[in-house]
Amino acid sequence: MAMLEVKDINVYYGMIHAIQGASFEVNEGDIVALIGANGAGKTTILHTVTGLLQAKSGSITFEGKDITRMPAHKIVTHGMSHVPEGRRIFSQLSVYENLLMGAYTRKDKGEVAASFDMVYERFPRLKERRNQMAGTLSGGEQQMLAMGRALMSKPKILLLDEPSMGLSPLFVSEVFKIIEEISAQGVTVLLVEQNAKKALAIANRAYVLETGKIVKSGDSHELMNDPSIKAAYLGE
Amino acid sequence: MTFLSYLINGISLGSVYAIIALGYTMVYGIAKMLNFAHGDVIMVGAYVSFYATSLYGLPTWASVLVAAIVCTVLGVTIERLAYKPLRTAPSLAVLITAIGVSYFLQNAAQLAFGSSPIVFPSAVKFEGIRLFDGQLVISGITIVTVLACIVIMIALTLFINKTKMGRAMRAVSEDKGAAQLMGVNVNSTISMTFAIGSALAAIAGVLLCSAYPTLQPTTGSMPGIKAFTAAVFGGIGSIPGAMIGGLLLGVIQILGSAYISTQLSDAVVFAVLIVVLLVKPTGLMGKKMNEKV
Image (cartoon, rainbow over all chains, first blue to last red; front, top):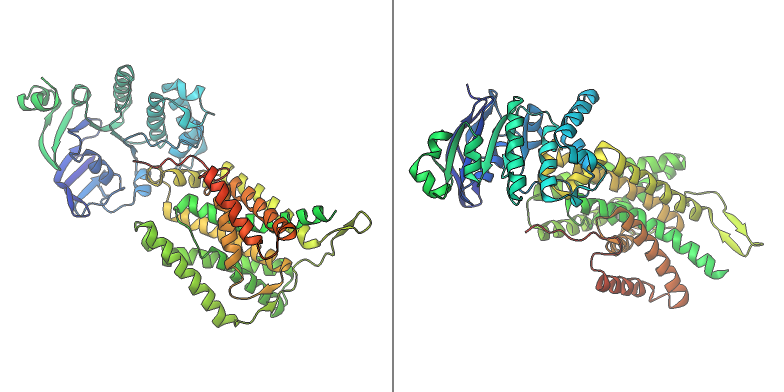
């Protein structure tokens, strides 16, 4: 059985039917990419999975538990962590406090300390700047902080929303490299990206979203060679 | 010497405004709403403390404690019943509801306690101190009010900056959605904020009525508006801002009524507010508004 199973969800913004019967699954250990144009509904899907939005119908199951109606602050305790679009770090809190917020639901001080070591080792910049207000970091550093903060909850699955958005090309490659490393350590990844080329390159499987519907899915290498995908998303 | 005594009176009144303004500013910071019923919670606190002493003979400290507990429950209940259902409603609807709650509290108090003013016995029995051969008298209530204000300010600053709950509050105030993703229960954070603000309002009510000993159902309304002004003056959402705004407002009001005109003292207060907002629209300590596009 898949780790995360989303079945036929419908999500509305008022009268707008934003997600129209989307279904997909993420298997444990995989990197799954959700690609699509601006406004296709990628962010809406992630928000629905992590409980920031409620689906009108359909079901979301994580490790066999139904989380469709679970509030966001409970879902994180089950091992799901979400790096939101635009990073949304707490700019008035220090880097250290942002990371502490990531470990908000964890009780064991020793384990939290171990997570700090792990995050500081992966992102040495954050360690250097731990007492700085997060708002003073550069865009790339803020993305590192958002990812580090999400890792502080020791997630089994990490949901990343446009992690490469607004970053310099150097940082974009760095971010994708880090995602692969995180995945290699056993964290399952659901990645939402407009940068389809990079996303497909590191993903095992992918889904293509168009105006609220999933129109294609499959092995990411197959999708990369699909002529219609090439034309629409890879600019070839 | 008279100037000094006016100044001290101003600081004392300003301390009360500051304590009330903290409630306004914290609720605004976390829930992004103006709780115009906050002033009336002060009045409820004063009544509860009055009756706890006069009917049940409780000592002063116990009556203040009872008032704080009753107001905490009241504040959290108001939030649950009146504001929580409007969490996603336009801010105008919330504002009007808050004004409605304010009138409700005033009228309920009229029903419960009667509309005629009662004389509030000072909660501070200590006579005060005389300085410079009796030329300068600092009353006991003045000393207690200023001390209470300092203690509350320090405790609240430590709570907000050093505790897990305080950190969660700052996170919620900046980005509710992101805070939820961290595992913060936003609803209980908002309840907590109302609880703290209302407990402070109860303390402010006792201090205010001890200094100005008339208590009636509308007692909270003017100090409430003044404290709101103080919060805006200092920069709404900012805790040190509420403190500074409150103190300045108190001093301006007392000096204004002493040297300009008693009748115009409120006008002076609001005139200063208008000038400050023209020069610095976010208030003295206000953060830059980062409205998301």
